[in-house]
Image: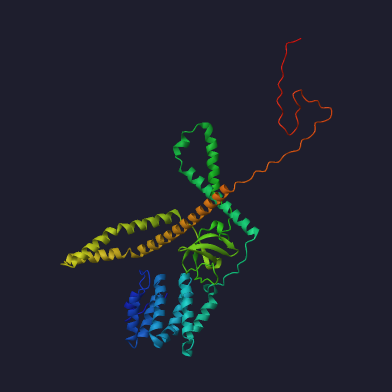
Amino acid sequence: MFRAQAAGPFDDVVAKATDENLTSEDWAAIIEVCDKVTGDASGPKEAAQSMIKRLAHRNANVQLYTLELAHAVCQNCGKPMHREISSRAFTDALLKLANDRNTHNQVKAKILQKMKEWTDMFSNDADLGIMGDAYQRLKHTNPTLHPPSAPQKQGLTDADRQKEDEELQMALKLSLQEEERKKSASQPASSGAQAGPSSRPQQDSASGSTSASASSPAPAVTAGTTAATVSRVRALYDFVPSEAGELEFKRGDVIAVLESVYKDWWRGSLKGNTGIFPLNYVEKLTDPTPDELQREAQMEAEVFAEIKNVEKLLTLLSASNVAPREEDNEEISKLYHQTLAIRPKLIKLIEKYSQKKDDFTQLNEKFIKARRDYEALLESSMSHPPQHNYQQYPLRPAPQGHQGYAGGGYVPGQAPQEAYYNHGPPS
């Protein structure tokens, strides 16, 4: 993206503070950069040049950490650093990165956010107006980067609820069809070969219909318009609640969708908290495919497989305090770098299972509440049994000229009376 430049005196410390393998800001490395900037007269200019190089890196993590580093030196290294951050060279690098179609949207949004903060920070200094001008140009060319306004809370109409029910029924139908297709595909081929001739045409027609249904496109389902067919969403922007009952979240958070509440607001849960959120702040997440689940399971297995190496490293480190040997030092260095590589994966697993723990805890609380409500309702119904009202039908007179039986006539609406006759000997 940018022309390669010669190595500078700040390249190493800046690269350390913006390493792509970091899982969070390395504040020790950031402070080291700040100290070096303030300790050298040419430090601000050299640091800015090194950060421009890091912005040219193709890894999004490097770009994000570089923006955080630039903000840190702005806050801690005084006006000389302000001039370099607000220089034409640095702002052009920011705009070029933000306007590159290959740049990740999260990086673009972070550039806009930081440029706004720097514009506000430099607002009282007319010499630093280049940053404000660049920020306005970026806003004009990328209007979608700015967080949108939350929509009005309009109640759901009967048509909206009917549409949601229809989408839910359609999703269930498609799920059942997919399940049946998987079952039919998993049946042994020998079962078809052993069938009699009379059953073969039926099987052929059935398989033909199955393949036809599988190859034909599924009925169109309007995805993302109702909560019936969406289970998870990812936050595109930070959202700060303005009213009670709204859910606070940060960019990148994954929210579990519970239900539709308003026309453009859903209810969701995040880290044990439940509330409503605007739809224009999130994007729909599809459920993981079998391949993705397999890769995730493989990554987890790799992390757990390294436990023995971590334990071995700890043992060697404990023993090396007594009498370190050269071969031990080599093995320690090898094990250290080998186990260090799993740290980003370990952080992801911790976040994953922490989220799952919060979700299961919240689900358990909901279950306990539902059970208590059910038991209270059951107890109330047993203590106040329903009163049955029996309706008495009026007797209707028999038709005129109708002769009843000797043992009593039958009246409609009543059970016939039983009559007993004593048959005497024939006369």
